[in-house]
Image (cartoon, rainbow, N blue to C red; front, side, top):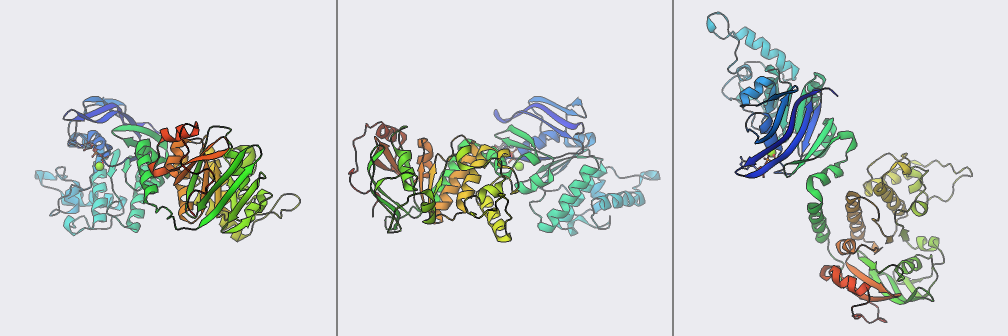
Length: 516
Ligand code: ADP
Ligand code: MG
């Protein structure tokens, strides 16, 4: 990277005593496009106004080409080489393009009269640089929005701006115009200028920027190379944990709960195991997410295993109204029941294989002796579809699974299960040990699967997770389902009490809960 053209160190800005920027330290380098992102009110425009001399910061220093400077006014900023393309462009409609560019700095000939020949030839050169094919004598009011914007850039170039700030430059442009603007921005970078690019269109910012800075509540949350940050990560940083929770909750709330009239996709009657569980009865409807929770060792994990043929049990399981007796997980798979293990390396994934091989592991049984297989075109497309359904951070199916983060490995586990086109998914600890961001993706994915008509069970020790994602929660205590909660009306404390066996059983332990 080149040296910083402009740098902010510990900058704070207050409006009537309220902090709007807090300790902002950031550098914008020559030959760099720097994206600035953040929700409305994050402080982007305020920071720009500080850099361009509209506001004086109460704390901190600005350095221009390494030298501390007090930027006194917008014209002082322009002298220092800071050019800002405001959304309103600051152009005078009744004047020509050339006059606007050189307003107040018109080249004067002898006798102090404006030398129009020089004015127009200078203007023409800069108009060409921004690929704006108009005459320097064209009146600004005759220009389109795109043309005005390019003119504003040319105007900044006329002052030899080392830094060009673009605040929402694409907001009023159409697709083709945006493409052309991004080309101009690339040209500015090649010319060694520094560009600050503000936009609400994340993919656009990530595409054009070398680095991005996320602002939230007037603070710098992170500055990262654009190649190292995904859209969802960026959004997450912009919104913050709490707001994500709210957003997630409202996304989950919007879905229609399965009505009691919906048929059971799985019903379980008096499932018993001599050692682990007794008389377990419940039903799972299409579109429903049912959680199962208990203290460690109460039998909830074994109940789940019995549901997909990994543990023998007495009693009855019906799938779509017809009896199912699974001897093995493969039997269960044939009836559309898949188990999604927690992100545990030995169970869910082959770390030394790539994504594609992992995703197709359970669907392709006929491998050649060498274990090498070539997928047909349709199968490849299917893999890609599963990858995108689970929102993997990479779209390269040949990436080795061991090179992925825990959250992405878990998404591969889920993608692998989706490839089997299940109607019932049994999750065990779906988000254990993975980062907050990937967690939320997985919650939304589970909800989307339910909305798509699958029946879903989640065994988890994380009560908040169950409250967030489930419709109903079953508490397992001493091998029995002792209580059932509607997630909507449940709270942590009551669930905890039930887990400890402190709540009197409200459901008939012999009865079949969840409606029939
Ligand atoms: P962004 O451009 O990221 O949407 P702004 O920099 O415009 O954010 O605003 C940051 C915060 O500062 C907001 O809470 C806004 O209400 C406040 N703010 C901006 N300008 C002023 C001002 N002139 N007086 C008082 N508060 C302001
Ligand atoms: Mg703004």
